Image 1 (tube, protein in one colour):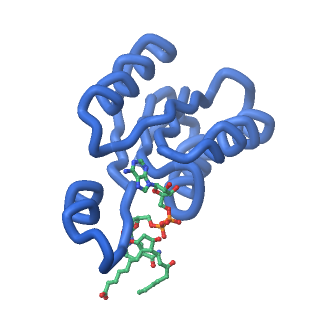
Image 2 (cartoon, protein in one colour):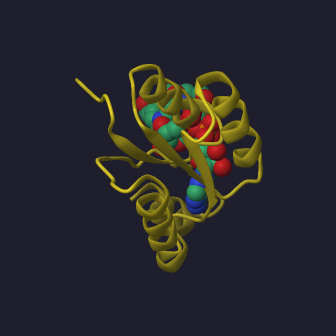
Amino acid sequence: MKIDGMVALVTGAAMGIGKAICQMLLENGAKGVCLVDLVDVGHRTAAELASKYGDGRTIFVKADVTNKEQLEAAFVQTRQQFGRLDIVASNAGVMTEVNYEMMINVNL
Ligand SMILES: NC(=O)C1=CN([C@@H]2O[C@H](COP(=O)(O)OP(=O)(O)OC[C@H]3O[C@@H](n4cnc5c(N)ncnc54)[C@H](O)[C@@H]3O)[C@@H](O)[C@H]2O)C=CC1
Ligand SMILES: CCCCCC(=O)/C=C/[C@H]1[C@H](O)CC(=O)[C@@H]1CCCCCCC(=O)O
């Protein structure tokens, strides 16, 4: 897939598969990537990717994907920062037997 110049938003991007998706997008020419996650580690991940792939190509928005207002704010900030939004990777997910409702809300 040709992604030169495209802008992406990736949820659950602070670590794991989400972080790897961000790396893949940046390596393949994405103009910018918005990392969305509810943990502060996302700040460090965005900075690490910026130092590797170029300043101005990543932003981090702290948001819980189950919170409509926070998630919408992430979409708005992405468009404000990069001027467009082409790709959304809905990657955030949890697996827990303790809080089934929360698991469904995050994963769906
Ligand atoms: N690792 C695996 O073997 C498999 C993973 N998956 C799916 O792939 C996705 C990523 O998995 P991993 O990278 O292994 O998980 P991970 O646990 O390493 O990373 C998940 C990220 O999602 C974030 N997150 C969790 N709840 C959130 C919320 N409410 N709002 C925003 N961010 C939230 C976490 O803070 C974390 O940074 C998940 O959806 C998982 O269900 C599916 C099958 C297998
Ligand atoms: C197949 C189990 C792999 C577990 C290794 C792992 O890294 C777990 C990651 C979880 C992450 O923290 C959030 C998740 O949802 C991941 C677990 C996904 C498990 C899928 C199991 C599918 C199946 O039952 O075959």
